[in-house]
Amino acid sequence: MKGETSLELYRYWEGLRKGRDMPACDDFAMMDIYKIAPYLIMLDVVRGGDGSIRHLYRYVGTKIVEYRRKRGMTAPDHTGQFVDEASRYYSPESIANSYAQCTEEGTPLLAYGTFKTDVKVDLHERLSLPLGDGKGSVQRLAVCVYRPKDL
Image (cartoon, rainbow, N blue to C red; front, side, top):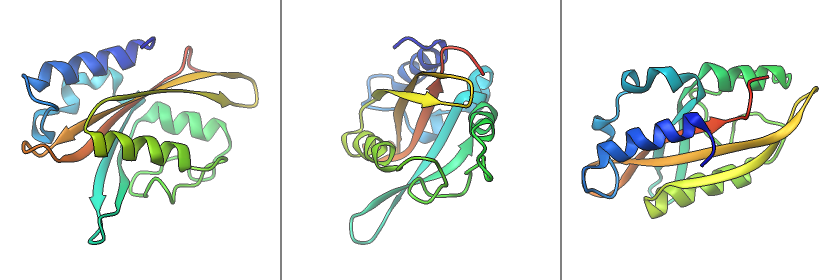
């Protein structure tokens, strides 16, 4: 991990685990990490009766919204939308797959990718961390998106 915000989120998550595979959703408090909240995404895990898994945006930080606004997105805040339904310039498949993997395995997932704006192309880091129900089932994901410098 290279991102300061990713490291801060991971340390917070690790401190909440207390020997468990993952912290419980009730243990996680955004106010404890308010300084990095603009870079966070909180996703609810929605399970279908057929065993399917979808992820619903519960919270999208202001920096994430700003990144999307700078890319010219007409609806830059996707709070309340499913990952596979939110508008974007690329296929949501790789992100949806990474969230599904984190949910199914119940383990952290660190991914790197390229982002492009009108003025810059650079790497970004995406850390996804599972939050559970206290019984081992993932109920929510805490995600941090780190870019080397804000645009």
